[in-house]
Length: 338
Ligand code: TYM
Image (cartoon, rainbow, N blue to C red; front, side, top):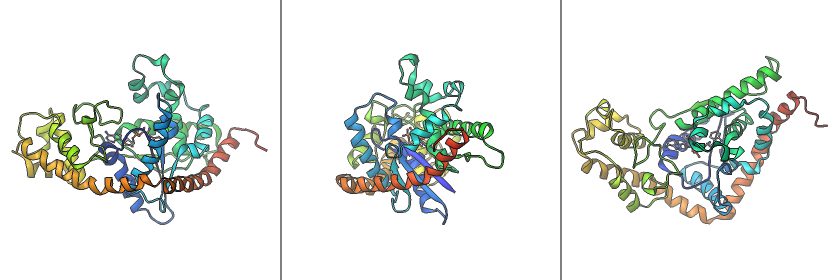
């Protein structure tokens, strides 16, 4: 088993990232069997596909590394690095560019959402973003890729690229690429904004009140949960009763995802009660869960030398691990390399 996943180092790590992906990374790392490996990286090359401030990206990359370690990623057991220190990601992206099709990329919902009506004005990197994402996982022969629901389509594209490349350039008994499986947590695949139950919780939402950041202090968490949009109805006793109540459903989903219970178990406890009772309980649960993470984060982010060393060590290992697939890709394409 080879687990590979990434996160963009822009903005703060939020509850959607944590429940949708990072907690699964930690779980997979902790349950890893001998012979298996986990690679987790900061997708700094992806971050330049949108307008950005270089100094913020630089600082954000180091802070995201600290946040991942604070969440439980252990650099002595997992390979933790940033793409920019492993040139093979960008190299493989180019090599896969001959296989990926414009039509496939045009169908990506993230591209459509981010580009909106102004496609002509977008960077080329935003359009080819999913090819880099395919390179990220194919480079290491990933078998499992833990992500939230929103990244599933990109992983399907990675499989399509791998399959077409194997078909076009490899013999059946010696494919270059492994087809990766996305691993999406059923209980927290899509955590929604606290202000709008139809939009996902996201780093790019201009409203800080829309998300809980993993580094928010107790007062901020309680305030954000108190102000979260809801409705005047009490909670039902079964999940079916939340069908047309997306904001209420989201808060129950968050509670269930944090405790590891199913939403019906949460409703068995809180059914019949209003948000005046549920919100403080949810706020306290979040404070209790996030306090140790934010405390560790605050310590780690001061230690620039340690963070640099973690990323340098991880990158050296990643360069080594990706070498043979990169070489096999050049060879399969008929490129002369001495
Ligand atoms: P990013 O940085 O937007 O998010 C990191 C991870 O968090 C998940 N996530 C969520 N899950 C549930 N609810 C939410 N509201 C929510 N918001 C974010 C994402 O699904 C993701 O798993 N393109 C990727 C980064 C990437 C990558 C890769 C991932 C680059 N290369 C290769 C996997 C494999 C991204 O922008 O994720």
